[in-house]
Every structure is written in C-alpha cells, then in structure tokens.
Image (cartoon, rainbow, N blue to C red; front, top):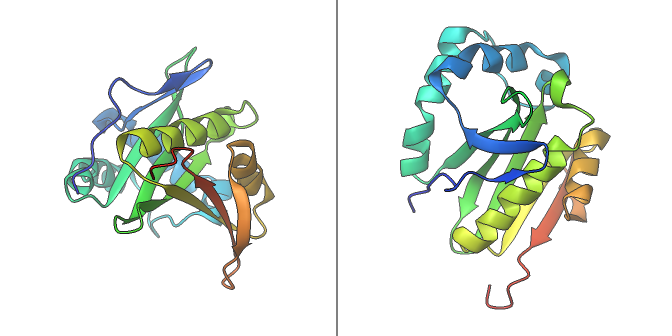
Length: 175
C-alpha cells in the first residue's frame, strides 16, 4: 500500500510534524552523532551530511513502497527540527505498524515526543485504517517507555530480545 504524508500537517500546541527537507541533512547528521539517539537507535557507522541527504532523498520512495513514513518533529515557536517520529514494519493483514521516535537535546522534556507519537498514531488509525500501533522500546530506555505510556500505549510484554512492547489500539470498533 502506498503511504501518504498527513495533509494538513499534524500539529498541537507547541509543535508539528512535517516531511524531511533536503536542507535538514545537517540536523539529521547531528542527531546520528547524539550519544542518546545513537544509544537507542540504529545509526549509520559513518554519519555524514551526504549520508543524511541520501536517507532524506529516499523518504519519498519508502512512502511509495509502503515501507515507512518518516516525519520531522518541529518546535512551533522556531520551526526547528527537534526530532523524528515514524511508522514502519507495516503488517497490512493485521492492520498494524511499528512507531519509533527520537529527540535532539533541544526538544527533550517539553512533551514533543509524546504529542508527536500520539498525533501520528491517531492519524494512522483514522487515515490508514490501522487497528494497532506498537512501540518497541529497549528495556533500559525508560524515557522511551514513558513516552509510549504518556501517548496512550499499554505495556503488552517483553519480546525476549531486550525490548518492551507497548501497544495502542484503535478505539474504532470496526477496526
């Protein structure tokens, strides 16, 4: 299934989601170099602006292929990219997907990841027809688990590979 970017863009008091732009490559490179982001997320072994630009350029194809939807989290007051939230691992038969997120230091502690995660999950239920969204958090990443919990996800179980699975289900009884 071909994915689309939320239109109009998803927003809340204090932030919004938007697609990655070519000129965001230095910010993505900085994120890949951030110790906390690299600690919990896969990052390239040689992060560079060129590699970031290539990843950003691939966003449209990943949408067309139905593989992932990757969006920037921007702070409303500055429109600066402070993080990322995305959907991937789609299982269309089960109407399910994974959700992931990270924040740069400038975005941490303001509820941006929680609001972004909640907004994207709501959109996935209403616009993509998903019935479940799963956050797979490293068992030691308590901040990520707290985001999932605050965004309305319930702890389901440990996956036996060092991750906690947090699940949020659609409230639509037809899903």
